[in-house]
Image (cartoon, rainbow, N blue to C red; front, side, top):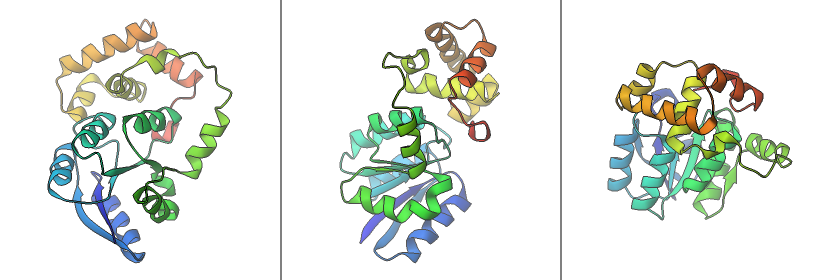
Length: 215
C-alpha cells in the first residue's frame, strides 16, 4: 500500500486526486493540506511515501517549500502537480529535490503511474513536459538572464509578467510589499531591464510562460 499526502489549495482538485487514487488499488490518501503551513505540519506529523504537491499554494514559494521538505524528510518522495508546464519550473523543481513533475492537465491520465513510479524510487516527467525538454535540447548552453534569478525572484518575475500588482504578489506570498519591491528591483538588475514592460517583452520573446497558465 502506497501512502500518499495531497497538498493543493483547491478542494475540488484534492477531491479529484483522492478519487483517482481510491479508484486504483494499492493507494491510501493519508492526509491533505491546503497551503505551505499545513503542508509542513502534515509532512511532520504523517508518515507517507509520496507527497503530491502543488507549486502555487498560498504562503511559501513552491520551490522553497520542496527544499524545506527534503531537508526535514529526505526519504519522502515529492511529485509536483502543477498548472505550470514551463521547462524552467520543472528544472527548478527537480534541482530542489522533487522526484516527479506532472501537469494538472495530464493528472487524470497519468497520476497513478506517476505516483507508482516515484514511490518505487524512479523519476517521473509528464509526457507534455518530456516533449518540451526534447524540443529545447538545442537551446544555447550559456545562461540566459532569467536563469540567474533565485527561485523566489523567478516567482516574482512570473507574477509581474502575469500582470499582478506588488500588493497582490505580497498577499499571495504572505510577505510585505516592501519585500516584493526588493525582489522586483533585483530581478530588473539581474536581467538588465529598465522596467516591467521589458520583463514582459523578454518573457514573450523567450516563450517562458503559457498565456493561459501564467499564474
